[in-house]
Length: 272
Image (tube, rainbow, N blue to C red; front, side, top):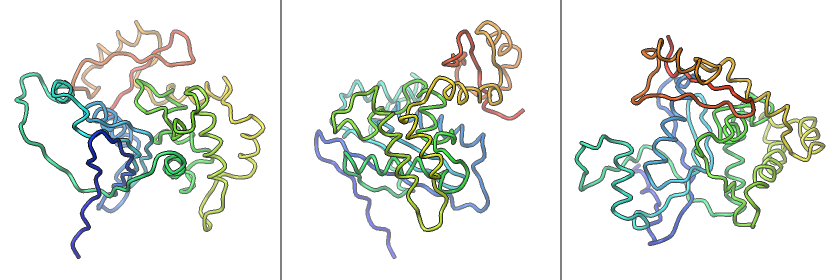
């Protein structure tokens, strides 16, 4: 049976939200910790190149989800297209006149507003449904985990959460989205794992706020996942010694560990 042509909005000046799903055809569990980290980096890099705002994502062992808002090409000037192209390629690379398409994924057009909120919650709850974690932000390879554990480092993810349509201010959106996420996750789903009533009650009693101690607990993963951690000077000095063990196409710089004053980390992206 031939594949149904993909539905792509091409209206001039209209942004559109898509839920993108891609699943491996390989047997086994191809995505381990290292591969998941690298895929997050790839998604972040390409979202800077293309006219894409990433609303959410979840990377599981054999598939991943993306919730993205696309801008039509005609909303970008020629100069902006060239600028984004050279973010990906060297300045000496010839700018192409044509373009290549890639159709090896499934995509669903999503209405803005409450539908986006529910779709984003579905994506962020993947690890809970799989029984991997009890709280969605405990899983670092999803958008809520990135917001909480990495404090949305480098502004990778959109702060929309589907709530902009309702006039909710940026500083309140994470809290309101977490409330929707936990209530959605506590609903019975045909025997699949879900957020327990106990965990939901704890979040309700905390008014879905993340206090300083909980935020610090999430930041402590740097102590086990970083290649080097310490003061900025220490990280730079040590990185110079072990530079060949870090995969990078350009010089890497230490990242500040938010919530812990004066502490920086350099994450190793290859196994020694």
